[in-house]
Length: 542
Image (cartoon, rainbow, N blue to C red; front, side, top):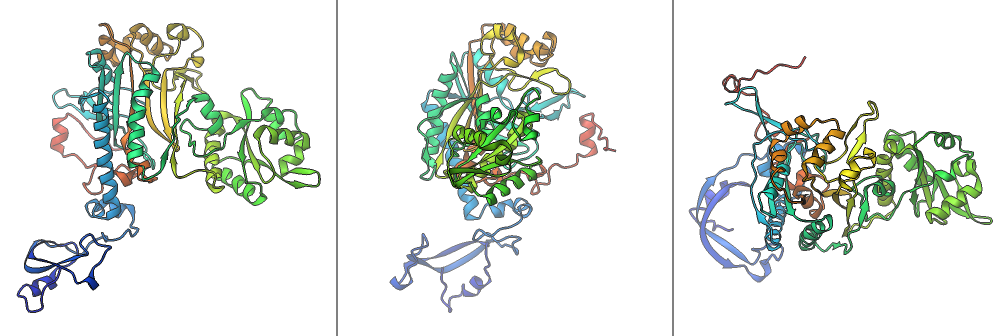
């Protein structure tokens, strides 16, 4: 924009500062060819100002909105409306809006119908803490914000609407993580009647694939989405949300250490339920790298990781490292052959009860893949994780409780529930993508007799089930169809598409890591009048 020096508006233009909101009247003229700026959308024109009105002056900004300078997250969240003016964040929020539009359109085109479910309802177990809402009309009683529309969407199936979906807000009082909001999130929620597990996959897979192809910015989407049993995922990847862009598969190598000269592992294997697991590291065969990964394990709270690396020897490939010396050449060669490794490669070893070390092993696998350049970063790798166990045993009390969704249909039906609870698997599934859980769902337990038996095994009486889930329990008396579905996390989906590691970068107005809204001042103290209306009293913690 330009103003002639002798123009009456020139003095007003000189007062204008960055981020002022102004209205301009003027004449649009083509720039001289020597002044054209191809980097700007308006680089071929100029506006010659005739009149100017200041609509909203701006004080000195607490953060700059031009460029992508780094600012403390607390500053960015406190002044989020300024942060959102920045081009990078603005682009991510627009991406989010486009993804939601595309999801909605694809679901309608797939024959699903959109319905809305209540936001204030009863408390139900979904694996996290509820946000409770006190009732003014019923003193001492509480509503809850829904952790998910789980029960309502099942009731929609009982009602005869057989292909439901919703872009649903969900509320969970959770500890924050980089890939999880501590308060609320949105999911693509869907449910179908008269379906098998594979039919649910066939319905949602084209929707997810289409969105990732549409907004993936050139990154490829794997054509094959394998189905991996839960137990296999934990063994090979140390997690039920594996990153298949990383080709490393962990393996059980216990037999090579049983009765060996490495006393730590040999004695460990004398205990019931223990194992030794290997993490192959192709191209990682240097002492420097092995020592660095050993230090990584120590930083994760473990004593360390044993390792073997293979190098050129006088008679061919030679094993090196402390473990190799203790167990001898025959065992190290057997390990190398089992893992499919060669000269210049390495392997790391962790032992004990799998639940105690496999999470760290999974993270180590991720780090090894990244540091050695094995993980492909230009693709989206999906996998369905299936055959989740329904129950687990508490290590301290020995009591049986639900390990995963209590509303899942047990594989084998009532006959399975009559046997060992720890062997019961559910028709429950997750979709993992690049190391994140993107979708979770199940074929539901729609039979009252099966539901009561499933909860009885976990210590819940029939009366307790009917009291806690009156809507679902009663509805199943009146001809409930078999049904199943899933939910896809929209925030996490956009995070992957935007190539971000922090979910707050794709949410318009997120909370900070302490679940505080610095911009709006939430959570806030209630007034005494509000507390009286709700028949509540705040008791300070000692």
